[in-house]
Image 1 (tube, rainbow, N blue to C red):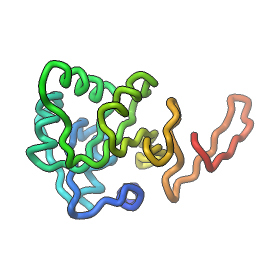
Image 2: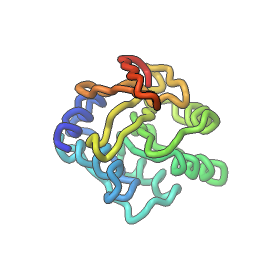
Image 3: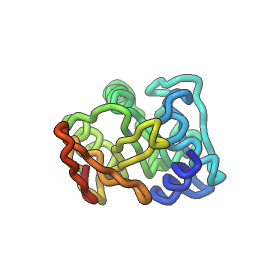
Image 4: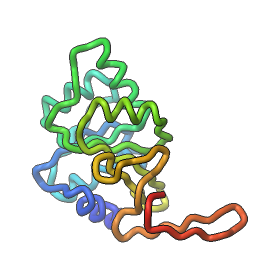
Length: 173
């Protein structure tokens, strides 16, 4: 867990000036470990809301000057639906949006890209890995859906086929 925090801080370039909005339940590995622990570890700010509501989440990014946020794909879908009925947008202070914990469709990815025009990271992780394993940056990596990106620094990924054939890769997973 501590190494995941170090790795996340280094990979995303977090500093004590950064702040995150905790949108996922803190009992979920992604909710607590993807951004909350790393921000606390580096001396950044963590903003907690009572529960996820799309409009309240959008407004909180502006009110608190949030610089990063983790949203599962279904949360982002709800935020995009909120856009069409309200004149609200995620704050320009948000420089980085992380997503994972569920599959990301090509159509939702394209909607997100049309909306954010900033760093969007889609990734894969799991409780046993502490949790961040791979991320792909939409700008730097030219994300191809359903790719989960490249392993984070100090992470080693081995892909194994059903017939036990090992596929080792240092590239996009």
